Length: 411
Ligand code: SF4
Image (tube, rainbow, N blue to C red; front, side, top):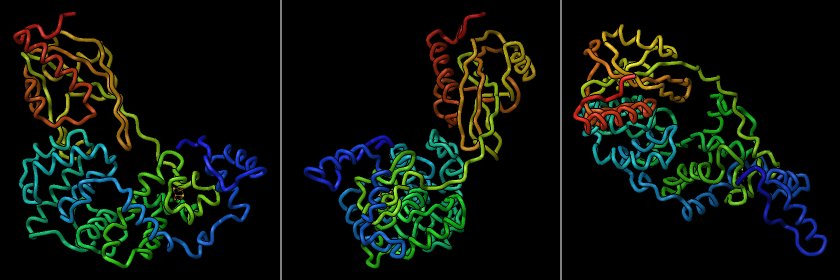
């Protein structure tokens, strides 16, 4: 629901009530909530003293009736739950579904993942981003396979590469029935709105406080406990949503929500502003020669570590400066296309890329690997280079049709 959407129903009715209702229909959700609060219309359950304790029954009833049918919710296998949790970090459910199915088909067990060739793993992860997640998955899989199974508690899980407090709690509770509150961004947002808490959610102290609050309201029965964390996250993901006003009119716990009652929900959560992203300029070359294009591997640490990339140089080089880079790599440039520019945004940096498609002669420096269209498809090239991948694939297809001759017209 957009900020400007109006309340569609109100407690008023008939005569004066109709006029009040019409007036109320022009209020936003937060204005309506504020009005109720100012008029003492908070329900008896909306008190900070009672905190979140009344939340569980309506939340679980709503979840049982409305939860999305997601594949990782049908299993208690720690491997499958772990893979889903890692994939879902910083990534939307819709984007994860296909990757999750393909990943488990290729690596159906922790042992299969532990022994997978890195190239195959990276290829399956291609486009999902945050590639260190995949590397850590494999490192952790090797440790789990060596010890003969997953640790069952948070402390043991936290010791595995790539597993933080939230993921450890999520696996311990969903796979092993542990009494652990799993607090992700969805839960932080929802709880601050429910309790009208204006603390900064990026602060570790706030996270700790909210985890303790949620830990205190974990349900008693095993059946409820098993779904509680998922229910909290589902509420945040589908009703108490980020990036826009919460859908309070559809919320199963609206009656006990202080943020709704006081009209503050849309201001929450409070987050300290992120640091501005660094801007980097690059010049990327799609090199073509005899029906093949050149890729090279990125360094083994840092951003996109160990993945394949199109050769590139620092800075936005113009048509006069760019051939100098090719010559420094030992190539003789033969033909060029016009610039192909692209931009890619990472969490902390953005790349602004000036690209050239160039037909060259010469084998280039060590580390340049020449591949045809099939080879290009088989290698994991991160989506930062997707524009150049598409250009290379197009040029190689043309080269194939023309018998590897005259890929580009000479300029
Ligand atoms: S009533 Fe609104 S703000 Fe409160 S928990 Fe529900 S969706 Fe979030």
